[in-house]
Length: 455
Image 1 (tube, rainbow, N blue to C red):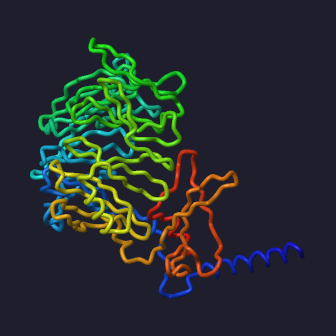
Image 2: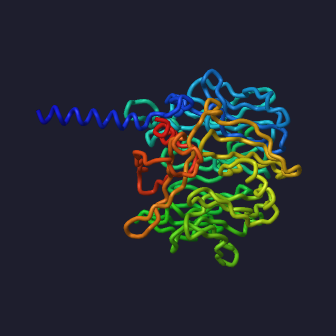
């Protein structure tokens, strides 16, 4: 009898909970899950280095391909690739302004091959068509299923100084290590510039010189080495195990004499730093006591760092170069979203800009710096446009030991009509905890938040 009464109570309170969560208005219908959790239909807006064309990823027969259009006429976009399998996700413009380079694997094996397609002729060529890696006995290295292990290519560097060439890593000699090659994208010629017999990777500059190499230490840290001028290597720096995930070499200044780094060693948050490679002088360029430096904006030719981004509650940019201050101030007025400059022309007159918002799809714009005008191009999810989605409110929750827990609150839109982050009456709450000790939640459109709030 007690079990029956208990079961009735569970059903009663369960129905009460469900009724309390139902939309109170016919104007707030349930949004289908396949809409909330669907894939982007457009993404990765880029500009050709000369600013004449734009490009993006969009499906052809439900498979992502690269589309190209005149920058002045985005509506004339047409696909230049013809992938029919997994779809293309990684691509970029070559500095020829006529060629798109992209990576493609086989059925998701992540053994990438480098392709190039000419935007005028649409001729597509596989520049690394290697299918086997020879073992010590001369026979192909095989997987447990007996199939040959395919080599993997990776992009090392792309420089405006060499429009026809890129640097790639390729493990077609030893599956454990990527040798460095200079690849001519027009002729397909491969030239070995560094055999890799034990390095995790290399740091190269715009002149395609190898400046540093990284090697794992026995305790899980990194040893950074530099060429000694005699064909060997000498120590440059070390990164302890506890800082490996938050310390990295980024790039060099125009002279090649200054190294820029994101560095968390000896500090609570990762800072943007520089090292004068001639004098050894180290400087802290920017740091925040609240969060790590996440991204930088750098002039495409002058290689000056113009702004840095830190993500605490939301992504915030700090201007370091006054020449772009007016640009970022204007871009803040275009859309109430977090700004991400995804691409820039070589003369820096045009930017591709993406806005991450909390109640809609990502919005992409082409920004004319001379006219200081941003032109809307598309969103990444057309089926989300016009839907009544909920706002996401950053909230700091004080922990028992006095620390701030960065959190994000999403309420049903009909329970928070003024979008102040407070419901008109108390509501049941779902606490959605992120996983992993290094992960964090971020402000923006969260399909799970929207799904729960909508119901």
